[in-house]
Structures are given as C-alpha cells and as structure tokens.
Length: 120
Image 1 (cartoon, rainbow, N blue to C red):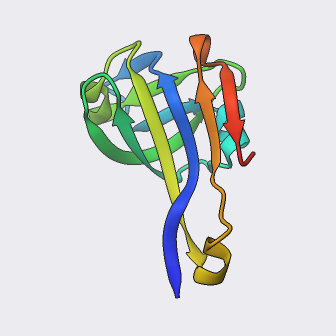
Image 2: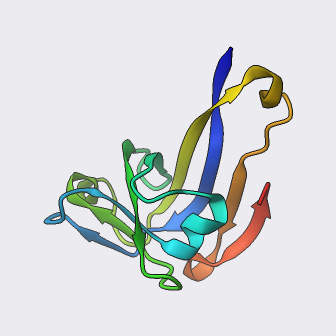
Image 3: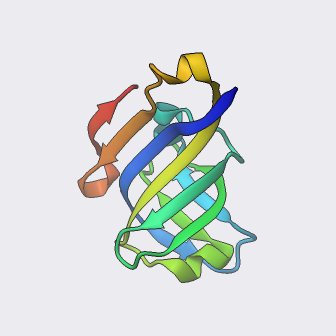
C-alpha cells in the first residue's frame, strides 16, 4: 500500500508580484525550488496566510537568486504582494518507507531568505 505524504514545503513565502494576464502557475525562485526538491510544472497546493485562500496550481521557475514568488493567471486574484504563502507538494510513498518519511521544508523570512530548514 502507498500513502500520500508531504514532499516539499516552502513556508511563509512573500508574494513579490502578480500577473493576471499570464496563463497560470506560481513562479518560484529556482534556488528555492531546488532546495525543497520542487520540479518545474509540479502540482502544488498553496495557502495564503493573509486571507485564507487555498488553491492548486503548478510551479514554474523564476530566475535564480531573485527571491521571486509570482502569482500568475487566476491565482493573481487570490493574493497581493506581501501576502505570505505556504507552498506544498505531495508524493506517494510505500507504507514501510512512510513511517520514517521526512519532507523537505524551508521557512522564509524577510526578503524571502531561508531562516530555517528541515529534511533538506
């Protein structure tokens, strides 16, 4: 049997921009994606800590080192620059491996800089 577990989490990511005219997705600094093991076009679940909105979309890389978190397409209506997001992805894991599973988690602070990391 397999269970669905948290794979990656970027906690308290500050939205830096929004572009309603873009076709969709969440732009995330490629360095942050790499740190938690998020792949381009991977499905993600996001929670906006400012307004309680939750939405699914997919991750696309923003330029390395930019610290960008960009709401694109319809998601641009679900937040504004400065809002803090929790960005999560999940994976199926065999039950025997699941007991010792540790997701890759980073917590961001000012300027979307990493202030804490676990499982990385």
